[in-house]
Length: 103
Ligand code: HEC
Image (tube, helix red, strand yellow):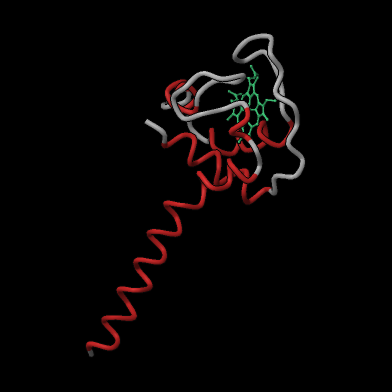
C-alpha cells in the first residue's frame, strides 16, 4: 500500500511539475522570449496584455495558436510578428493556453 502511494505521489508530482515547466520552457526553446516577456514590454506585446485582451473570448486559444505559427500584424500596432513555422500544432496550442493564463 505504501509502495503504491509513493508511486502515485511521484506520478502526481511529475505531472504537476511537468505541466508547470513545459510552456515557459517552450517559449524559450522557440525564442519567443526575444520579443515577448510575461509582463515587460519588448518588441511584441507582453503575455499579460494578450491574456487580458482575450480574457472573455471563447475558442481564443486555437486562434492564437494559429497566429503564433503564421505570424501577423495589425492587432497590436504596425510591428509585424514573423511566422514561427517550427512550432508544432500541439506546442502552439499549449503555448497559447499558457499565455492566456498569465496574470
Ligand atoms: C521578431 C519578434 C517576435 C517573435 C520572435 C515572436 N513574436 Fe509574437 N508578436 C510579435 C509582434 C510584433 C506582435 C504583434 C502583432 C500584431 O500586432 O498583430 C506579436 C503578437 C503575438 C501574440 C498576440 C497575437 C494577437 O493576435 O493578439 C502572441 C500570442 C504571440 N505573439 C506569441 C508569440 C510566440 C508564442 C512566439 C514564439 C513561438 C512569438 N510570439 C515570437 C513579435 C514577435
